[in-house]
Amino acid sequence: MESFDLKLGVNRLGRTLDNDIRINRPAISTSHCEIRWMNDEVTVKDLDSTNGTFINGQRIAEGRLAPGQVLRVGDVDMFLDTARASISVPNLAGPARAPAAKPPPGTLPCLNHPATAAAFHCPECEKDFCEECVRTLKLMQGHVHKLCPLCSAHCKPIIYRDKQKRRSLLEVVQHAFGFADKGTTQKID
Image 1 (tube, one colour):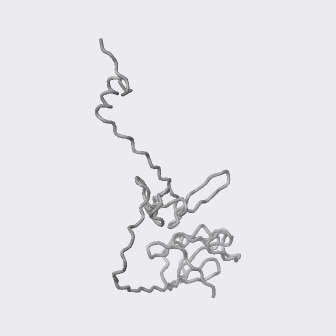
Image 2 (cartoon, helix red, strand yellow):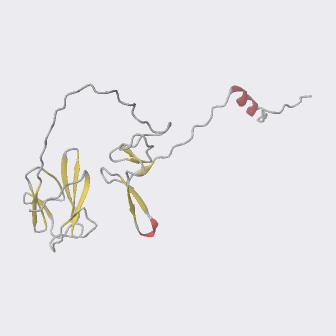
Image 3 (cartoon, one colour):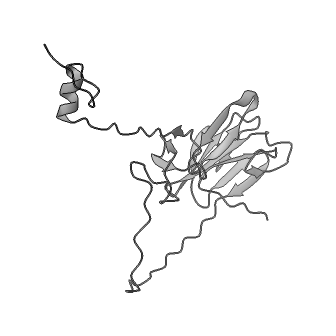
């Protein structure tokens, strides 16, 4: 029996090498289905496969897969096996920790690298990531997509704007009366 570990987010299952889970059988489509693991829940979405995707014998377009249920793709039966373990660790007072690193002022921290400024925001899971964390998908014709490492949604770039220097009252008055250059004075007759 062969087993596959699901990664957090979207796992593509199909016959070709570009899938996360590859099963090379004629009854399985090139891109057969997506298995999504988020928030302690596993859902399966059929990708218009030829032979269909089934949970416990019921053909699905999309459905929740619970532990122990049988997932059938093409002519292959699988089941979701989860093992949960919880460990309790007492709160032991240890040596004082150094303060947590912060990103540069005026920026948001990356979820995985708190000392690094986030460069991308995922509108699906509402998380921020640095360039190192996002997945880059390069398509033909030069198109580049930045994908969320958690849910594989398209990430949007975060644009940081420099704060404009606030002008003093003197600068506002000088600008209003056309005396924008502070270094010179004009003689009024």
